[in-house]
Length: 147
Ligand code: CA2
Image (cartoon, rainbow, N blue to C red; front, side):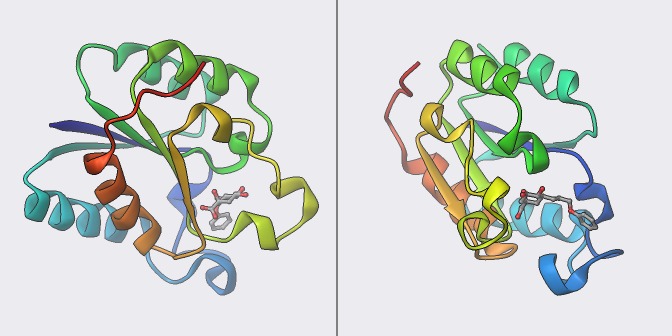
């Protein structure tokens, strides 16, 4: 099984700024954690980050026929991007949404996720463990997402 792991804007700053909100781990640390978990689960992962919405849309479109699952932390685009929502719906690949922080316990503008309804589920608030828990969930899910 091949799983595409996508990270949105500013996540490249993790560990260097605002550790009181997001913890001290860098994105490189998260990638290592995820690779260790993937090895345990016997799955292949590709790990990417971009600050550009269009990159995420193109990567999701291009994942069709290549990847079996997508795990995504869309960062701020979670709350703003209909384009991302439409790309996830169109690709039909079961997609798991993850966030380091509990977006529902933060500012009201973070409570809404525009991608949640086209994802099979959401893992939020567990710090770096959101990624490893999300990876396990992605491996176990056999559901198709709704459009
Ligand atoms: O909790 C999460 O994982 C978020 O996706 C993180 C996003 C935020 O916009 C979402 O509402 C929740 C922010 C990622 C940027 O992280 C920074 C790290 C260091 C310094 C500044 C931002």
